[in-house]
Image 1 (tube, rainbow, N blue to C red):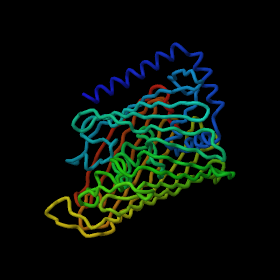
Image 2: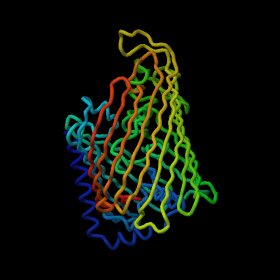
Image 3: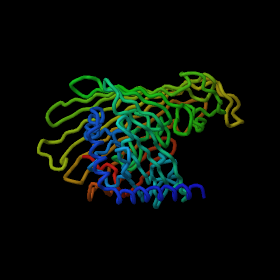
Image 4: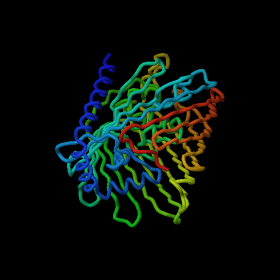
Amino acid sequence: MKNRALIAAMLAFAAILSARTAAGQKADSTAKADSATRADSIALVRELEKELGGASADSTAVIQPEQAGVAAPRASGGYMNIGFVSLTDAGWSTASDVQALEPGDHDPHVKGFTIPNAELSLDGAVDPYFKGAANIVLKIDPEGETGIELEEVYALTTSLPANLQLKFGQFFAEFGRQNPQHPHSWAFVDQPLVLNKMFGPEGLRSQGVRLSWLLPTSFYSEALLGVFNSNGGTTSSFRSPESPEIHGGVLDERPVNDLQDMLIVPRFATSFDISETQTVVVGASAAFGPNNSGPSARSKVYGVDGYWKWKPAAAEAGFPFLSMQAEALVRTYDAAKRVAEDGSMGVLPAETLKDRGAYAQLLWGIKPRVVAGIRGDWSTGDDGAFTSALRGDRFRVTPNVTWYPTEFSKFRIQYNYDDRKTIGTDHSIWFQFEFLLGAHASHKF
């Protein structure tokens, strides 16, 4: 009942804003022109990075005013874009437990049909100093019930000196390339296995602040530092309530006393052209914070990532192209001596649990609006005193083909070959349809 009320409120809110748009097109046009004038160099560089295939959460929100399909006028002279994107998945798998096979929160969870993501997005200029964005997500669980969550809500500064920018609110941590992306930006139906292992089904996000610095170099170089709350269901590897699935012990309700009890996420990324038709982006990320296996236990996650794209000078609408993306992650989870959640196991010893994994994906833009891809996934973990399915060996090969009828819709077909060491192999076929409404950024090639 509560979810229904929230959904109704969201729809009413969007309808009111749309009605205001029809009554104020002239004011909206002026507001959008003013907002475009205020665009700072940091936003422009991030938009360029997005063109190269590396959109981050904040760059997704930077939508050029002329792309807006629905924009509510504001007396302050700013603007607000409203967008909606929906994903529908359908398919079949030989696995008896599809949820165990596809653990990501926006992965296909059932044989048959599901709605893994329906997202209402709001973004715009607050005033000459700030931009704001919010993403409200609805999804249907394996039992057919609708869930709703405030996935992201944050503000971005637009006028700090020295190429600095602050981002604050709740948002995805800028760790690697895929974690900050929303599901409609993914090149595949499901999330890479290693990200499920390290960051849980919903990715790494929390409430906090991030400072970025665009270095004064002739090529793109950016340093970022995020500080977040380390607790909650979207901080897997740290103080998540689901942590017993990793360490097997009773949760330690440790307090927050100082900065060491927060989640720290640094990142550095740089991009350069290796020829007139080829571009490379490389980055390194880390995440440090407490875990709740004991009063002083800590976790560390390290990652490196790379992206390469070739597009000929005579490309038409972005085609043809070749691109490759890869990430590798390692986690060190220092588990304290702890009482086992399963009472029959007694006390588990202090130990360091190490996990690692990687994925690599290749995309080929065959011709305008047709893209073929293939991805390889691998993840593994050391045995510990507590046996966890999350640390088991897994391997997956995933080819797919995507067709974009227009910039605002897509059809995708994908095959998964899964090999789980302790369970065996499985085969899955998934179909996906997406449509975009309003001001959401169109697909980039």
